[in-house]
Image 1 (tube, rainbow, N blue to C red):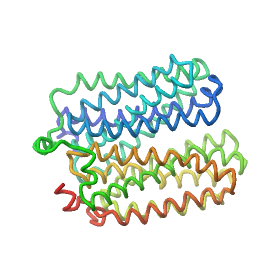
Image 2: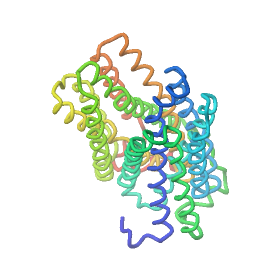
Image 3: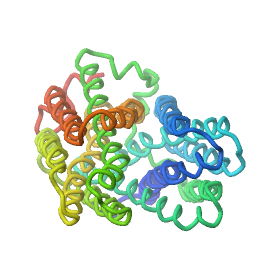
Length: 409
């Protein structure tokens, strides 16, 4: 993208969208690093601690659906700012709570804002980016999220020992600075590529995702693929470090290093994936990444030395999470621009809500079966996602232009 030719408002909106996604992930990951402290401090059970994560995902689903519709009807920039304010204030308010009930209430509220942000950010990126470079721009959005996760880890390590878990959540106010900068920096509208005539004919709605048989199949297929994507991510990042410690004997320090190397692999995979789908189309590249993911997660069981585990983690992360930005890129190609926020939020957050339960499934498998069965389960998920991907109508066109039936919706 030739940034020198991009209007100032568009540049500001693009930077804000990427920063917003990074801060979104940072706020969401605060819970992962504070959860053990919350359980100990409030005297709640592990099941109750798990419910806090579940209620957050349910808030994301609600927020994604509601904010997606409102953004496509009322304007992306306005709703983008509101989504950030909601997850920021909902996160920071945890500083004042002293009960399990209010933790759940505030995490649900924060989830609403976080769930709304993603699809709006992707829609903003699509409106200011050349169509042929959407894969690369979407990959930058994914990397921004990874940087947000790293920021959460660093802040947790610095803040929790001195201010406790409540002090960590107070840093959820940081994104408000982004809202203020965006509010005073963007003059007028950046959405010059949006078709206002489309919006006046019919108000964008969730029903448009299922307007035809082909669109219904596309929507359900993408929801299944994102469910597998999220399930694989949770399986890799939430359970595998403890599996490595308990069953293979990797030290806590070694597992932390493993996570850092794996995140680096993920971020590199995102950047490469974005370049490849712009060049070769998503069908071929998704096929390669899904098949390699299926093989690599299963073969990872046989890595025994610490060096093999580190290299294997980077390799698995490269393929398993490298695909993530691809969903935002193909959704913007397969659906009309007037429902980009709706489509992106619905597809991702349904996958996030359902895929989040993978932690329970993997926990059950760990209690009753071997590590080979656990990783075999993840491998089968990727193979199934590969088969489903082949049925998505719009992806059969190697240039990944939207199909005629989708364009006419």
